[in-house]
Image (cartoon, rainbow, N blue to C red; front, side):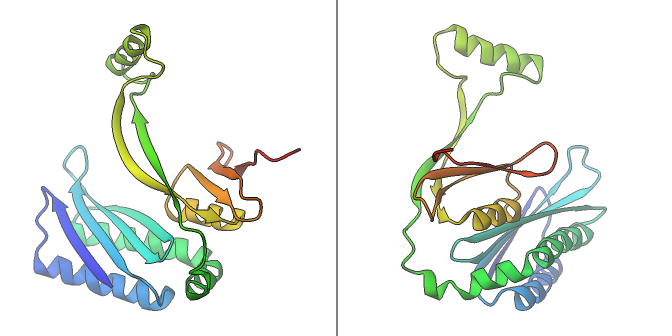
Length: 203
């Protein structure tokens, strides 16, 4: 597994990189035979008092997961992030392992469809942001200004796989093409903690 360790205004010495590689190596050997790569980033919190570690792991062909941890030093932040990853994997262990082992058998799955991911200026929140968003609309725009844009992929999945992907990637919402019907579907995390499923098919 290829592991990249980086720091945003945080020194990442060889001892820390070795600690990260060893820790992720244990997780990969325990849960994934097909783990491909991991990106680990360290940064300070907003007040500059604590360290935060973000782990983004590509565990298989279409399987991604994320963990975040905070601690008084970089080592402790990584350990917390790694534990979050391990807890999430233990919860989905059977389904994740089945998914990983079936990668070779699903190579004929339709390729994911390209899609744009766009972040719009929030219309609510801090007064300055709200005023700016309202000004965009007042000037004739059909939506607030675009503040970020990236390329994404709409995968063809079962509903169960979509829920698993959403949770492992720590997303609030995920659009996918339903493998059974071919229609675009959405799963999302509701405010009450349950998962909502939007299916445009007939009632």
